[in-house]
Length: 346
Ligand code: AQP
Image 1 (spheres, rainbow, N blue to C red):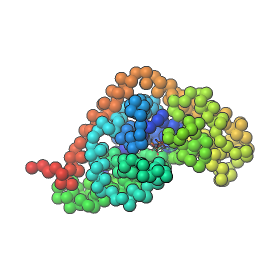
Image 2 (tube, rainbow, N blue to C red):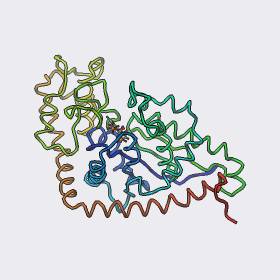
Image 3 (cartoon, rainbow, N blue to C red):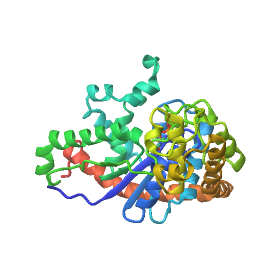
């Protein structure tokens, strides 16, 4: 069996300012993985345009998301940081995967159903094949580990199916042309952030999301102390005090979400939070949560402001990252063409 060297890949869409869900669900894990792995972290701008983006806003968002990566603690010397559109091998491999993945597989993707909503006929074809591009993002680096939030679990399973089908369909060519017995690894999802599913502050049954129409539903990484405190103060809750055990959070999605956020930000568990705050009214718990959130998040916002005041640095990080990403992706894409029969040496 081919043994693939471990390599981490993940990305976020520059569709708006990153929020607490992106931070706790994925970013905290990304930062930790820099200590142990070679990491490739992408600003997935080609994914963003599966839904229309204002061009000027998109250009700003690419810089802002990059600034957020740096401000949160990604180190461009250790990790490769770049935007997807600058490494054309992503789009090239995605086309090959469009021809490997099956319609039936994509038809089962719940994120497409949620995003397309009732107006499915009017959704872009890019939105439908989004998971194929995601598989290409990972596999064009032969990525083995993918730290993501829980909402991406189904897409990761599809990436594994695509890798497996490519390995099977082209098994004879892979072996005959000296590419080992498996061409692609089956990437492992790492859904292990401190809060893998942070919910909306306005509706505890909906995930916190950049595309939610209400800004009050999410804490943006650029929010100042007043905005953070106001959003937590206005967060939807129920009239009961907090229970003293997690069992008491069942059927109380908003309470469960706020306790989960407190635990994740404080580096502790919901049980420990309820040990301290069980019996408290939200009027007492919310200010404590706001204080913790401000302490954790305001240094990130301050660093983002500093970085965005000198966009030349952010652009230089992206240019350097794209060059290093291309150096890995280009030979892998050449081998894909060899395996598929698109380009044979000699
Ligand atoms: N609410 C969340 N809780 C935990 N993790 C989350 N992630 C997103 N929302 C939450 C994780 O953040 C990473 C980047 O996500 P993305 O930008 O690619 O897009 P998304 O998952 O679709 O997130 P949004 O905020 O809902 O974006 P829009 O509204 O643009 O679609 C992923 O690892 C994701 O799991």
